[in-house]
Length: 376
Picture 1 (tube, helix red, strand yellow):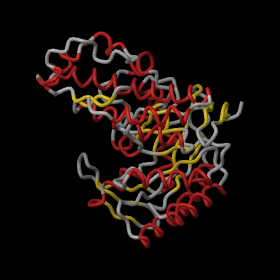
Picture 2 (tube, rainbow, N blue to C red; picture 1 turned 135 degrees about the vertical axis):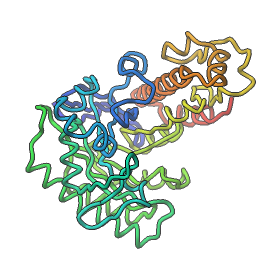
Picture 3 (cartoon, rainbow, N blue to C red; picture 1 turned 180 degrees about the horizontal axis):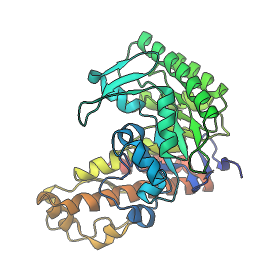
Picture 4 (spheres, helix red, strand yellow; picture 1 turned 120 degrees about the vertical axis):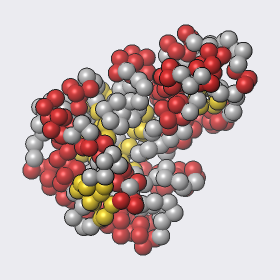
């Protein structure tokens, strides 16, 4: 069976497809919950499967390398067994985390030396080392080691960084071809398009990366502070170039309306910490709009948390109760809100997929986005 098959293309760029991995199939477009340290914060794996209906989750190379370390990971038999998750996993390369440690890292052609945020110890990641760690983690889909530039970014810096990312990609591919999988299932490497918000650089990067013929491609370096319109413009330009026959992964995006717009631009896979991070800060996303659960208006509202929600928390708990938990700083508030937001995000991409299949995605998109943005 092919790794990626398109089941239905819309009148423009949105498409519904299926990714097939050794740990199961993923219906696209898909949102991937972020499980940074082998855990999606405050959420059980059982809830991820049964209530949120996550089809694939993320692990983080940088964080897992530091804790629990690759020695423990290999003894466990890889991340799937370690965290008891039998569905697909994607790992990022560690590039973005190293980028975010700007004050405590030193970058050379060879790789990046950085200081651990945990204990201050020094570590080194090269393209080869990133590939080795991701082999030890055992993700179904893993990412090439890249450099992510900040926003705003000077043209010369963006160009130099992009060219380094391309040289590192070559090393990633060479290492991967020379070193087999560890756990008996196939791993697929995705390269990453860079180039900041410069159209000509993004075009070059997308073309260079396409030439490597990987089974899927990622778009990195967006959602780092640039205006939404810039993100959409670059995404649109890049998806025009990347192969239509392969899945396209837009990294680190975003709000519900970002996700719907990106699907309309030909993106198949997305991830973001936003649903869980915002949930822990009492912000809930719903089909009707955005709710701040600390607001006084919910104090005596005993209606269900979300009458259109798909998870058990939406019907079992009232708005007043969840508000009370947040005001009382009770941990259960974060759990309920995280389950709600993730279930909503998975429902969002499921419904988007249904509209692509039905052939009315773009009409639906224009109607639903203003609703999603409302403050309740």
